[in-house]
Every structure is written in C-alpha cells, then in structure tokens.
Length: 454
Image (cartoon, rainbow, N blue to C red; front, side):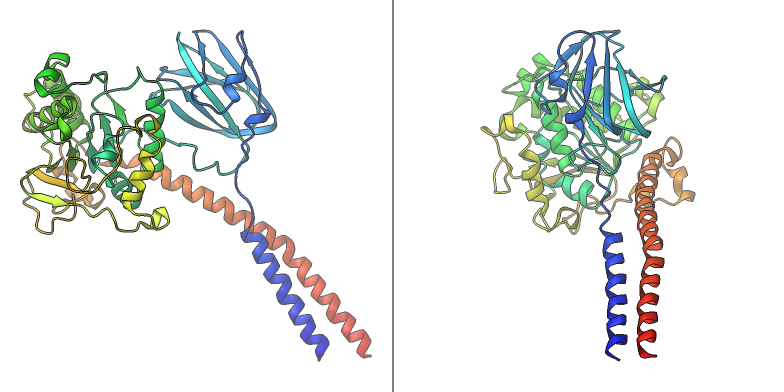
C-alpha cells in the first residue's frame, strides 16, 4: 500500500513539474547588440553599438551600414537623431523601404532569423545614434514599438512643448491611454530639433506612460516668449490657427485638452497655443474655412474642449486612483515617472497637483456641443467613443466610415493573439513531449511493484 501511495505521489510530482516547466518557458528576446559586427562607409562604427542616444554618426546618401551577428537577428531597433525620410533595408538581397512615418525610434521585426542586414542611406545628413539587435522572442519593454498616428482620436492633447503634457495635463495620458486604452493623440505646437536630446526624452516619456501612437510634431521651432503680444511677433498667428484647424480635422477628436489662456505662468508660447486653438474650434466645423484641409480631411466640430486652469465650468481630475496596468501606481505617479525622462528640464519644473498655476488636476470645460458636465470627474462625460459607435450610426460621423481608424488596433490585437498562441503552442509541445515519459515512468514503477509482490 505504501508503494502505491508513493507511486501516486511520484506521478503527481512529475505532472506538477511538467506544468511548472511549461508555464515557465522563457519567451524573452536577448539583447545581442554587443555581438554586432558593424561595417560602415568609412570611419568607426563604435558609436552605433554603445547604447547611448547622444553619441552619433552622420551619414550621407549612398552610405551603407552592414550589420552581421552570429547569434541570429530577429528584430532591430534604430535610434535616429531626427527624421531622415524614407530609407531602405536590405535582407537576403530583398530591399524594403522604411521611414514613411518619420519615427526616430524605429522598431523592425524580421520575418525570420537573419545573420545580416544592410541599412541603405538615401538622403544626406542622416544621423544614426544607435542600432540594437535582438534574438527571437519578446523584446524588452523599453523598446518602443510605435504605431502611426491615429486616423481618428478619442482625445487630442495639444501641448506647446515636450514635457507640458505631464507638467500641466498630469495623468491624462497614463489614465486615458495607458489604463483605459483610448486613442489619445499628442500633437506638439513646437519642435525641439534644435535641442537634439529633447525629442528622445519626449518619446521615452510618452512610451513610459502607455502611449503607443507616434506624436505629431509641428514645423514651428520652440522660441521662448514672455507674452502673447511678443509671441505674435515670432510666430505667424494665422499659420498657427491653420495648423490647429488641420489637426482638428485630421484626427476628428471627441475631446481636446489645451493650455491655459493665460499661459500658466505667463509663457507666451502657451498663450498663443491656446488662443489659436480656441480660434480654430470656431473655424474647423465649416468647410469654407481653410479649404485645403477641409478637402483633405473634411470639416469637424469638436464635441468637447477643456483648457488647463479655465475658470468656468471647472473640473478637478482625480489622478490618485491606482491603475491596474501600471502595477497599482496612480496616474499622478505615472506622470511623475514620465517627467523623469525629461532630464534636461528637471532643474526648472516638476509635476504638481497643489493649487496654483502648476496644478495638473485643474481644468475647465471651455466649449461643448454635448451639454454641460454634471459629475465633473471625466473628460468624456456625455461623449460617445468611436469604439462605441455602432456600424449603422457611422453615417453620422463626418467624412466616411470608421474602418480606417480601427486597422492599427486590429493589427495590434492580432499580433498579441499570435504571441499568446506561440506561447500556448510552446507549452503544449513540452506537455506532449513529457507526458508519455511520465506515463512510461509510472508504468515502470507499477510493474516493479507487481513483480515484487509475486
């Protein structure tokens, strides 16, 4: 009897081991960048593999970067200094064009494991900071797999500078994009190409807070201004209105979040950003205004617009609710985390929720076509999200169906499903491999017991 019990225990132990082994299969990719052998068109290639965004090499049209790795490459992550336009990637003599969306942090997964690839530079002054290589599997979370900007956005955030979206808009991105999974599109009124470290800080921060749609960055440079009047001398006011009208029509947001009309602490750039935005709100819904963008995207009247610190129709957002997608951290803590990537700005600013011009929880409903807020705890009160619009109601959404807006999301879901399927198949493989061995071992034990009992 004791031997039978021992046999049952052994069987249980073996089955538990199989289950534990199957569930602990490591699907992580290895960072094999250190094993890269890089040959470039003249000069040293060391800076391309030092994992430092701030060391870089300038390439010109016709230059090639040949990377080989004996460990086998399944994906690469290229850090550009600024947008370079389209460029070509050669694998097994097959050429594929990338760079369509202007990503400066660009992740590319190969169809199969490769020993070598070649980056073909197609424009002058193309600056590369780093090229990472990974083995097969799931790459680390710090690798940014950016999706193109949305076709249609639930929310449009319109900060003047990179870092304003955390300092003044607080937990908006972590809560609505990272936690709720809404389509939050960030558009910056200015760019920081003159300060090459800031675009990297910007992308690292957005990704860290759960945003996945690549931001839109305008062609207007960041020029400091102490007043609205001064800002109007360094920026063309009408050009900024036209830009705001275009992005409204392009993304057709249900909600827009903008700056304080007084520029928070009196920043002229913030002032002109908010003033041109509110002017654009009154123009974007009529096709005859700025006809170029209305012909391209159609007209759009934004249902709700909130401005930071706006004194009327006040709403105070609660950024202190724990978020399950961020291991219980709050939206405010995630905003602080996002701002931590903006190392160049740490000495001047921080994310705050105390009363005053930096209160990232204080907003006011500036304009609405869907009625006033009652609960005053959600930017989307009274708003129907795009994903909630039924197919038969799509005709009520100007300028076509919603099909294009969901393509990227469907692709993301399918990719996730494929990853899960691969993990499932891997687990099943080990189970079916070890199960017969377990049964064979148990049979041998039982046979041994029977022989001894004879």
